[in-house]
Length: 289
Image 1: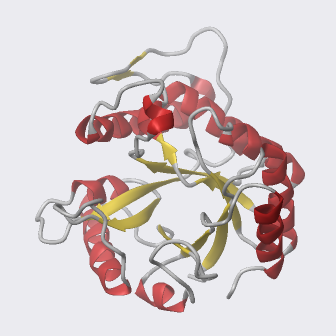
Image 2: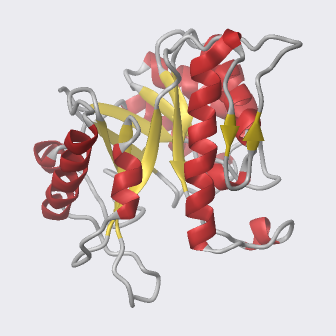
């Protein structure tokens, strides 16, 4: 599979995201990604606007903290952007990292509870969008109960059975059971990470060697579930301009290790006119293929 290239739009306004999505489409990018933050902007409103201003480039999030969503609301907004874009949306999901903005409005229930919620939210998301206009999906879970919709029928998504989902999958070296990777294997793509218990922030830099190990485990789990490996997305987030994070370009070693997407994450760029000008410059350069 040919490596595809995306970029995350960092600290901008909604209108600027739409402008950058149009610019990205003009300069050969395969996807533009927004992100979710409490009270800053609505990623899905901005992506809906971008959908109507573009015709080819894919649209998505990096990332959506699914545990903070009611699953029917998540299915509704993703389905809306899927229809507006004629089937170009991908939902990127993580457990979410509680910060001051998050904790200003609600407490953190803890990582284990967030993980259980992500599983349940995604299961209901899948069920509702797969049922689509039939409206006959039911669910009885730990947090949510769903009954068939009998009054106003839902709309079908363009991408069937539902818009694809990428899930963060964290390899924990030395651990036999890899629950995070099992979660990612059930969906349409993995955003790889490495977690080493006992480290100050819990994270370890991803390397091509660790990526191969991680993907071997994900692939084995998909085989166990009877799911195909062909078409499964492997999403490596880096910065080929050398500013942010531990993963730098070029992307070729990551492609050799199994990556199918290279996502440019330029979080070191400041908000405001100077950062926006540099964003435009980098997007105009196009993917570093």
